[in-house]
Length: 245
Ligand SMILES: [Zn+2]
Image (cartoon, rainbow, N blue to C red; front, side):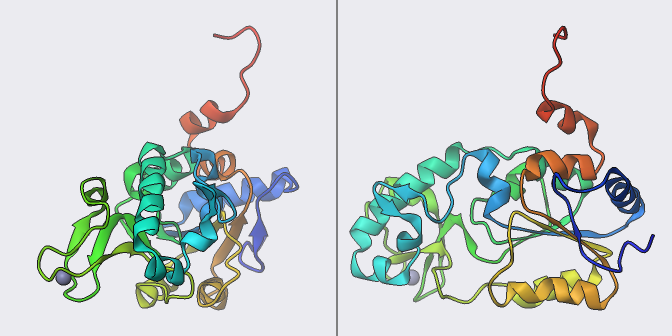
């Protein structure tokens, strides 16, 4: 079976044979790169775009205009978000990716890949760990917002911006992401449809290089550990059998 002839989709509908082939292929594959999106963090209790924070849909909070027009309100909501995110823990998918040593390109700002132990991580949309000064480039830890309602740069006095990109702003480190995918022996796309430019171009690079491309959209916390053959993590998520303790 030529595993690289076309993309594979891992879901309930996959045949046992195809899944076994994928596992076998990944077992001997050297460099695995994953691209992740919001779906991977759902099992960690994190919100999606249409969820609300203090009554405001997240997609509105991430619009640059909201921040520009009312930074006081923005930072009030940011504190909610930060509290929410600080309580989230990596799930079995994040942990399996870290254990496999896969390189991570993520669209998420939650930082859960790093917390799971992944050391090579590209955060295309930035993160919630930091605040930045747009004037002098100074970076601050985001928990500053718990001491200052509207945080300002200590060096130049300017209002600080969140460390994530807002809707419509360009993604970060994209050239490096392209480079990583170009070096990949296998590419897994997890919890995202990669609907937008420029990220939708990344799987095309892998296809052009005749590399394995696998999509996992639902229940990443179940499928990813199984795909990487990491039994201890699988066990935590299979249903408990009666009569066992
Ligand atoms: Zn500054």
